[in-house]
Length: 248
Image 1 (spheres, rainbow, N blue to C red):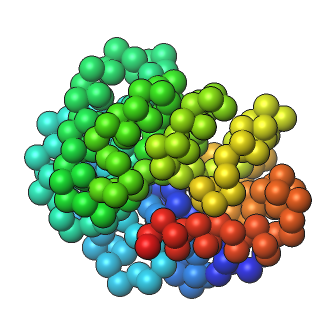
Image 2: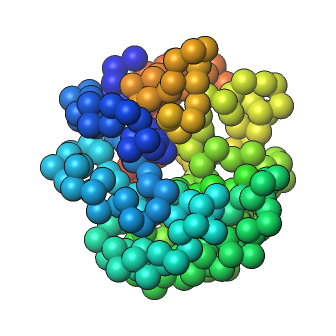
């Protein structure tokens, strides 16, 4: 698989120990990469690292799992908002260990959606673990497609929730862990091909003992090609065209 055909729409490059090396690698290989951040305080430095990059973009984020710790940085988020088109990682997490902070998560996410709608043209990569329906409903209420675009990262909701997300105008970024069982593959089959992007979510995902990074997206493409009954080059082209449509 030619690396220049690859898209990694959700990766935490700044959490890799060889962050700058990977940044250069994405550039040299021509991998269209969105590196997300988990708190407004780290966005500026990451943006400076990537400011001359052609293929890497940096998203401004406030991760729901960190809402209790960094919720007071919403003003900083708002300050930086005009300087980037890309927002993430943001959203809600209702899993055990984070459900106690759902009230503050919800307030922050709603505020972020409203700010993005007011600004217009933003593209968001969104976390929705154990909170898919609420996330989708909030997107539908506060960020209709003509005001911004939503990409559901590592979606683990039901097929019914996936259909609702499609109706709401959402895209989905798919990683290798979403393609590891018949049940998960069935969910991907229900999502229109023109709504699918690829992601590594590195360094949080491993294949074997290796941590996924942008150059490993070919493994996701290989699986998608099989699901779509096509070849890898065609599958990569579908994803690349989906990115173009998302950005248009």
